[in-house]
Amino acid sequence: MKYKTLNSRSVILFDIDHFKYINDNFGHAVGDKVIIAIGKMLQRQAKKHHLYFRWGGEEFLVVLPKTNKQALLSYAETLRAAVEEMPLLKDRKVTISLGVSEQKQQEHIHQTIYRADMALYQAKQLGRNKSHYL
Image 1 (cartoon, rainbow, N blue to C red):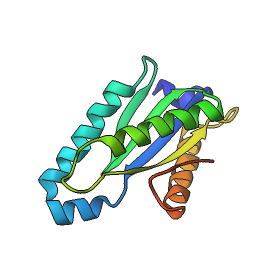
Image 2 (cartoon, rainbow, N blue to C red):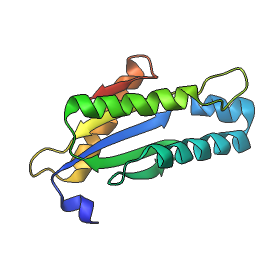
Image 3 (tube, one colour):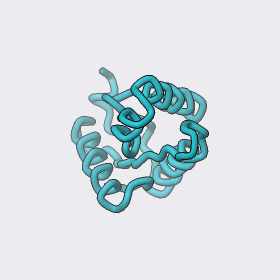
């Protein structure tokens, strides 16, 4: 609840590219293992003041202290590359698309997450397996 009122947060919202394909072709048990593995990777990558959540389905949300755009995109790229390098499926890489946003002065955190969601949508429109800042 305290993060709803703070005005100094950045967020990264990401989801697993083509997750329906994974479930349909490898089974839901494999899809669950992919989600669990990515969650564990987040635990390893997260810094002390980062919060991470499974946002729904195959989406994840990372809330971190306000970070400048370049450092935020760099961290998002670290997450993207870490997932791509994980051996999660036989003969197929798993990738993620990420939306990145900084909370504006006096902005509710839900608005920041909404912008990150729009940035995520744009990352997918630009070809997936990339980060986009909005």
